[in-house]
Image 1: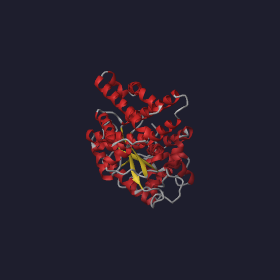
Image 2 (image 1 turned 135 degrees about the vertical axis):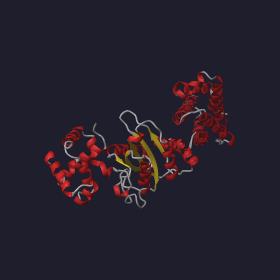
Image 3 (image 1 turned 90 degrees about the vertical axis):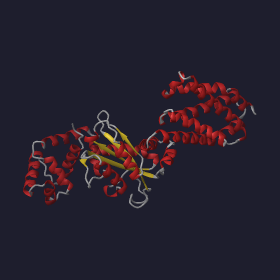
Image 4 (image 1 turned 30 degrees about the vertical axis):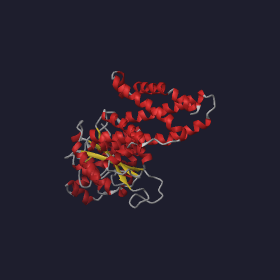
Length: 416
């Protein structure tokens, strides 16, 4: 064994202690090691074993054996069984990798520039075997989760791991019998009324997961935020029929008529489970590498979209539906002007409801009157009243531009 590897071997015990101390210091979930001597000894044994095994295998570029991987998996399994979160698991892996690289660098510096060949051997071993070790650790971790968590919570963990870019999503998907999508429609359903409290709609979500075979997570309300359901619905890549023209450069945008049926079906199924509650859904398509951006966009769309009660016509909104309202939300002075227009209509008889129906029926008098269950002359009176109060004809180009945004902002409850 060369001097570089010998140096690593000499420092193995000290480096193992440093790793355990770093866990306690930097990861709150490991604070119990300060009071549980047995657990601390087990963590130290594993850290020392891994370093010694590294020094044994890396000089000849030998792979980790099945027994080695089994031991690593058992550590992941025991930590998950003890209640470790996915976030803590990810921090453990990052911290462990960082410390191992630091130890390699210290051993290199101790040789005063010698041992370059040994360093290269170590690095060529470390990357592939480290990946195998992480995979084994994750497999063990997920094995424990399968026994500890209900199916719906496993699906929620898969959704969150995909949103966070956590590689454990591969193992979670396999455990749930799901395939990781090449593209997915990130869909946010903003909920009011029945689920305005903290109740977790577990049975409804479990039914959705099993019916639509998609990872789903529930975010309870907090601060000024409504409760949200987030679903990652697997889709073919954008070049496939039904998602847009091949070669498009806008993967996050969908026009309303291109929303996949799978997305619309999930939104309707969940909305109908609300029992009269109101919701608004936004969706954006992305590959896994851009999924966080898609979530942000889908969430913004859902907040700009009007809240409506469940019906067979309910569908998710896209950028093409609310691009004006998205821009208005970022321009407070424009938003306040539209709010003032909305307030001027409050004195009329159901004027905002009338305008909503009028624009939803493409300004067709007969269809609008039928939807409102009023006589066409009553509709004409209301539209004249809008013109009197705002100075804008609802049927004019100017009226459409202004009043559709007023109606949508009002129904989205963006204004107190």
